[in-house]
Amino acid sequence: MTVLDEIIAGVREDFRHHQLPLEQLEQMAVQTGAIRNPLLALQTKNLSVIAEVKRSSPSKGNLAQISDPAALALAYEEAGASIVSVLTEGRRFGGSLKDLSTVKKNISLPVLRKDFMVDEYQFFEARAYGADLVLLIVAALSFAQLKEFYSLTHELGMQALVEVHSENELTHAMEIDADIIGVNSRNLKDLTIRYGVFSELLPLIPRSKIRVAESGIATRENVLFAQSHGANALLIGEALVRGGDPKKTMQALLGSG
Image 1 (cartoon, rainbow, N blue to C red):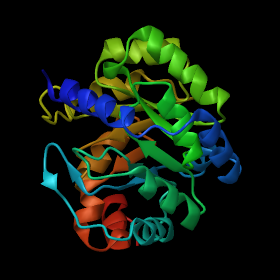
Image 2: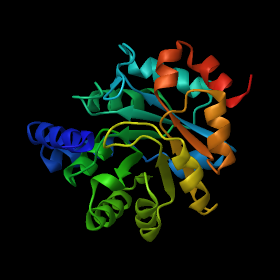
Image 3: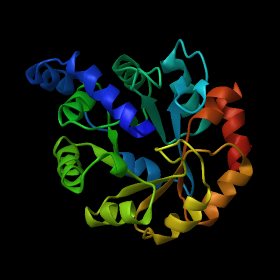
Image 4: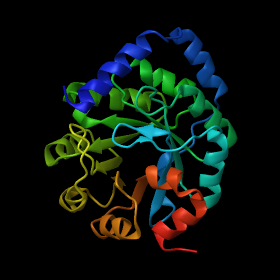
């Protein structure tokens, strides 16, 4: 099994044991209030940042002890992030739905549920816990699932960040007319990073789309490389949680301040 296969197997096993009735999720969704528009948030700057609340990862292990995810999310908001991403997968990333709910209640930015979405139940769950945006990994889904889940996301009022790693996956993202497309430089089969994916795929995405560079954004040079090939948003996790001061780290990456 690849790393992606192992993670998905774990995700399926975990959510089977922690399901709430759909009726309860629907009631919770009403209580979370109106959806915050991720598209609008990402269109207000020349280069937007999706900043992650991320404790650990399969490639790097423990990254940071985040005892107060809401405080970190507030720091991201004050630093100028456009969206806050919350890892909710527990086994490999140390996240939870509680983190998602807590963050949503304490900031005014849109919130991304960053998880491996492989069952329709998870979309109702995401909405109930406050997600405005969910992640759809093309490599983890059949094309039929991708279309179904993208449609369900919009039916529930949310937006989707559609993640690709190859030209074939990008073709699928374009076929469903995804508004926000992320190019991930990390190979989910073996977790290696290849920045050349940015130069190969980002220029193929129409300028009318939000083009997100994901993974491995750790230096000012990484930012400039992604931006030069068409990225108008960055998803940054490890560099921010390890940097100690989110504002200073973000300023250094963006060349501001």
